Image (cartoon, rainbow, N blue to C red; front, side, top):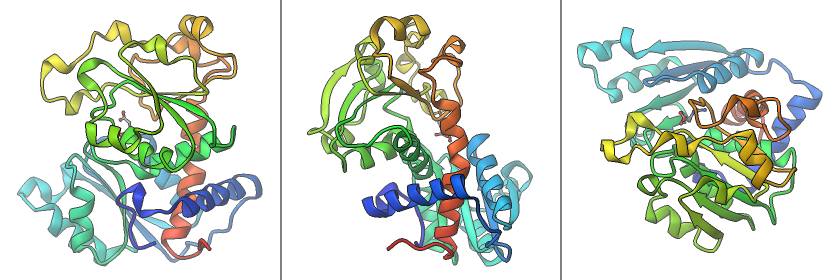
Amino acid sequence: MPSLLSINDLSQSEILQLCQRADEIRCHGFQKNLHDKLVALLFFEPSTRTKMSFETASLRLGANILNFTSEHSSLQKGESLEDTIRMASTYADLIVIRHPDDKAALRASAVSSCPIINAGDGKNEHPTQTLLDIYTILRHNQLAGLTITLAGDLKYGRTIHSLIHVLKLFDINIQLISPKTLSLPDSLKKEISHNIILESYHLKDGLNTDFFYMTRVQKERISHPNEVPNEKEWILTKELCEKYAPPHMKILHPLPRVNEISTNLDDSPYALYFEQAKNGVFMRMALLEYALGVFSCT
Ligand code: NCD
């Protein structure tokens, strides 16, 4: 695997084999087989789960970590992303990058001498989140025949954008639920036109589903204040779920949650989002093994 810039860089078979490897690690343990590797984590944007889970995954596999914080780096002196990457790639065996620019991962890979993993580039993509999302779904269900609702900020949510590229590979029914101002970009809608069974601007309409994938409004990426929806209409509660959702429905969310999932759902059988976050470590261990050549897909 040279670099993972987009989820499209992986085939359907590679995605499924990575899910299988993540599950093996979870169920049967792992070796510290990356003890001679150095993973650089270059996060130019805030992160809790993605950064910590890459750190955890690296350390558990025996790799060392090169940490970087943009506010204490030469970026403050005006250094370019390209120069930072060019140099970091001569130190490390692998770079994991998160950046507010939609093209940052691509720009990084153009100058890097080591593989790049995209941990979120602007509103563009978040492929490693998609891997753990698919793994989480697969632990509960087969993909074929499922109905999945994508809800919230479908315009700026990069986790949604990457996930869509994978959902379209399977026979999955997709329901799109968003505020009018934050609907899915047309180019992505076109990609899944055969899968879409419903599009609505009301939260409750999407609750008749197997998986409800909720996302927060990406306030930091919104270009016009008119795009911000009425928050009160975008809160998923236990009461709504009990009224409109089938009992087996599961809620996913990449986190962080702001107010869009009521905390009264956290201990309910609907909530899968904390397990989803935990799965991030197993999936990122599998991915690091793959990227650093100690696991291969057939
Ligand atoms: C997501 C992201 O950064 O895009 N968070 C994450 O990595 N789990 C979702 C978000 O910030 O809303």
